[in-house]
Image (cartoon, rainbow, N blue to C red):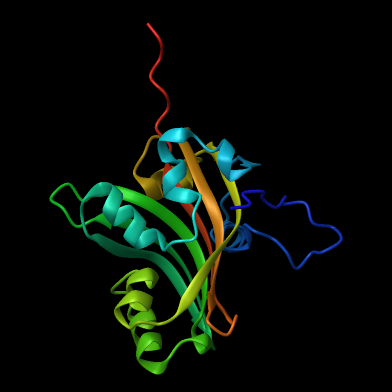
Length: 197
């Protein structure tokens, strides 16, 4: 897979902004963006590369990795016409309720069947679960990958100390007719390598 990624600097094509959902929420909440550095997928930390550099749904990928079902916490959202903008936290349904991802996303509900729209509006389950449980054909198209560190806002979402390392991807989900279903910026904890003795 071609793991090259987009730059956030897009003066010639301003409509392309791989971190747009995150930028939108940072502005709405008057929060700074976390410091992130874009990189090719093959340069993501080896320990977590398999969680990000792929074209599979994140919900099921995280569930398999953590050996637990994944629950959704909608932290904040706005619903306007056919768009659902939200910030979410994904956590395991195990007794530890470990936070495994924070994401900012924009869902284009008009690209979904009516029953799936209701499920999205309810916020009771992750978008990946909504799509899978209703057998909605879709495809994931990662637009870029990054590493960085949490600022206070993102640290709170991930339930980590400020300055903790993170990694992530900017992803779009398309329908089988190539209609845009969602734009997502997904951030996961990035365990730092153990110091050599």
